[in-house]
Length: 534
View 1 (tube, rainbow, N blue to C red):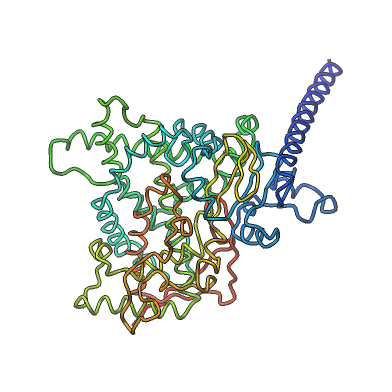
View 2 (cartoon, rainbow, N blue to C red):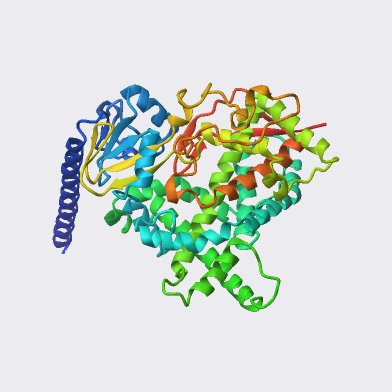
């Protein structure tokens, strides 16, 4: 009996090892094929997935191997690769991907992707989203007509009236929640964490009519914490072959699924409550103006149309993107803006000069609203926001799959089936387009930059006539739907905080090292002291 069990176990182990060997052999053959496809392009080839490199003895590793998924598209990798290969394009080939990647940092590439149908959103983004949420959304949808249908249904949710609400909610949240939270301990604050609490509250109320109460919620399983886990893990999750991740429910894979389940349940409950409210208030003047309520009313109107409306799964999936992307990207931008102020005395003096001038010109008013934003009264803060995104772009590029026959770009052959990542990391720091490109200077986004007088700041303007030189919110029709939501929220928050505080690093020796998961973020926590202003 014991011998039989041992025999069965031996054959089972042999079978598993054989399957693993055949799988690795298949992946290696595909990998070599990809390397050959792009052999004419300089760049980086690595069969071993970055997360597995740490399990390989040091003496067997190649010194050029990437050991962390966050380094594949990190800002440093994108900036240094062009210098290393002396070109605006290079390749990244990995054994676990189904196509070779070609990274191109050239505004002409942005125009190609935005205008040519042969460049399509890669399906792997959609596949993971449907797997986790049962529905697609405007961020991952690869079929143009389906994406356009969803986008048209969602566009009415981002009108000036909605932005007015965003400004009001931000104002209330900063004054009633964030500032009291800061006052309880002004030293050694995790600036990214503080802004994540703010932006989660704002998107909750302005987007869903729901208060997550993040400044008082200490729960380790809060959506704010689940969001951070999801953002840090989703790239590794979706690059792992589906056949593997579908059969593993522990570790990273289990945590990603758990985070997705928590979001689905929370959003589902919010939608259910909002539908009941909309039904009860459908004939009254007390209709809510948050994004979700507008979407639900739009859905009800469109249900009788030939094209239909968003399905429940699509509504939940799109709500998830608005919730996570809407709070994560804005929090990062605000965090980097505050870091710059804490480390750049000139800019911090400039912003204090501006905000003090605003208060003086408005008879001592220290309340900031959407009218101030829309009328241009807060244009310096809008310039600060845009300059922050220039040097610290939260998103570093957009991926597309070349679906038609092989194509040429600047005399470089792009093979059919390759993934093309249009990156703007180098363009945003290129002296060809930006004077003193490495210097943080918000005034470059204001008119009469060189003639600014004390206390007088020019109006906002875009110094670039080519829209693909400054494309931090994406390109073409797929440009970020929430870009003004983020800008309004950031500007109002900065107005209150810069009026009340100066910022300094808790550790004067702190050195910023950047990493990239889905968004750009600091490798080590940025700790800030809030110093009350007289």
